[in-house]
Amino acid sequence: MSDWLAGQELEPLPQYLTALAIGLLIGLERERNPTAKAGLRTCALVALAGAISAALAGAFDAPALIAVGAGAVALMVIAAYHEHDAQPEPDPGTTTVAAVIVCYLLGALALSGQARLAVVLAILATVLLYFKAELGGAARRLERRDLVSILQFAVVAFVVLPLLPDRGYGPYAALNPRHIWLMVALISGVSLAGYVALRLAGGVRGAMLLGLLGGLVSSTATTLAYSRHARSESAFLRISETVIVTANLVLLVRLAVVAALVAPGVFPVLAPVLATALAAGAAAEALRRRGDGKPRELALPPVGNPTELRAALSFALLYALVLVVAAWLADLWGSKGVYAVSLASGLVDVDAITLTNLRLYGMRQLSAAQASTAIVVAVSANAAFKLGIVRTAGGRDLFHRCVGPIAASVAGAGLGVALFAR
Image (cartoon, rainbow, N blue to C red):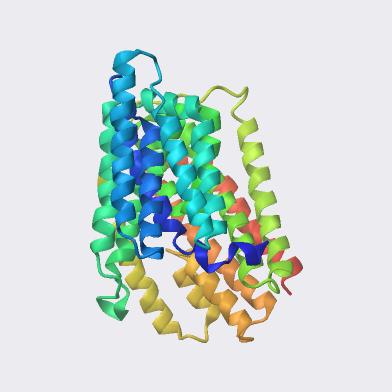
């Protein structure tokens, strides 16, 4: 199965996903227009059809295929409007026509030797077609402010970020403009996704979902975004605590998965260590929630700017400063002090130092126990840094709610090292 998924023909999949995202973005705005004959799904399918036609044009050295596809889309829209005027119906059938075009092009794509890619795209197209009511309802519940925030995030992530140089500047070449701006995009994206999820899914389910996604994407960005929410609106305190604690616990699961994929030899040692940390943090959170008494529905307070761009920019400056300090400490302690380097690097980025330690294990420079201990040191430093963010950006009340579960997970990690990484 892994060999099947690792085929080179899946390498352009991100480009197709980008085309799909473009169609969804345009379709999101059109979906809210009751007079439009093409909405969220239709625009997404048409964009997907355009991407496939471009790929086929290159594969067969026949650029005319793109023009033919454009003509077919134009005829589809003209026919849809003509039929709708002649026989008014709620659905003129443009989605079906677009789906037929996609099916045709996917068949041609499979015939060109990219069958596995065609299968993946067919599944995505089927998901779009199946969840018609859910996608349409979600788009119609968004307000004008929500769309402005989505466009603002799109500029931050897809216009500014690619233009920044991907190289180090400043002391120790520690300041990489693209990596620093990536934190701005992550914080804006996490905050925006959280706002949308809470509106669509509600308080409890939305908060748990946000914590899960935040832990998978960036627990640091999630911690900052929801710390600010808790300070700006007291009603957001319980949601923020749920999201932050969940994200930091999910981080432990993510690291275990990374270890299993990158260095399977470390996994039998690291997994029980992280499991102990997860169990300790979850138990502390359960005990803390018992102190809240009877569970109540989490209220969703008003949020001024869902993308939190100003907060993201402020954190980017702090992030740049910590990068320089971490690079200085690593240089001061030397490359042989793996635990010291893990402590310094873990302040801002757990993933990078985790991968470094796993690579050192693969090069036989570290044992599985040493690599696991170094990863725990990085996780502990990162937890301390995030608790500092909670106290500074979120205030005392949020800090008191978060410190127990996060500190318990760190203590559990230390216990796990003592028991399993000797």
